[in-house]
Image 1 (cartoon, rainbow, N blue to C red):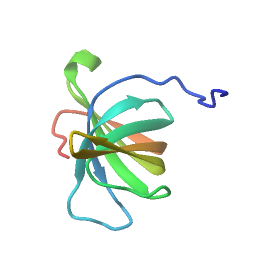
Image 2 (cartoon, rainbow, N blue to C red):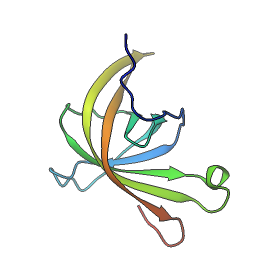
Image 3 (cartoon, rainbow, N blue to C red):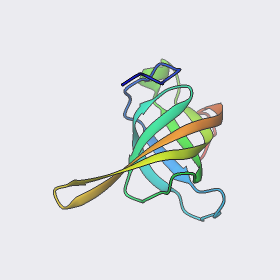
Image 4 (cartoon, one colour):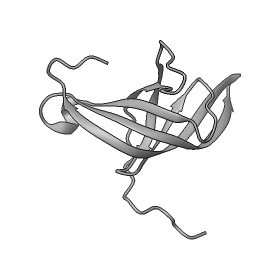
Amino acid sequence: MTERRMARRYDLSLPVSVRLPLNREPRSHSGHTRDISTRGVYFMMQDDLIPGTEVDFTLTLPAEITRGTEVFVRAHGRVIRVDKRQDDNHETIGVAAVIERYDIIRGEGFRL
């Protein structure tokens, strides 16, 4: 199989908060990343999503990674693949999303 990725992927498990902008849901869905690049992200969560769904999400980069204060990456993207996994009577949803735009926000005074 030919590698189609155009950006380097980093294996990082980071907290992620996901919202569905089209539905304007009042609550966010939490999860964690498995890997991330400048063009995409793969995250794990409990809630099912459908390919093509637009998502807004916020990643938290801890001070240990940034060598300073926490940094938040607020992004908008689109789901391109959903993987359902069953482990110990527990279903986990893996979501691959393309990042369409993002902003980097320093931790001081920022709230999710």
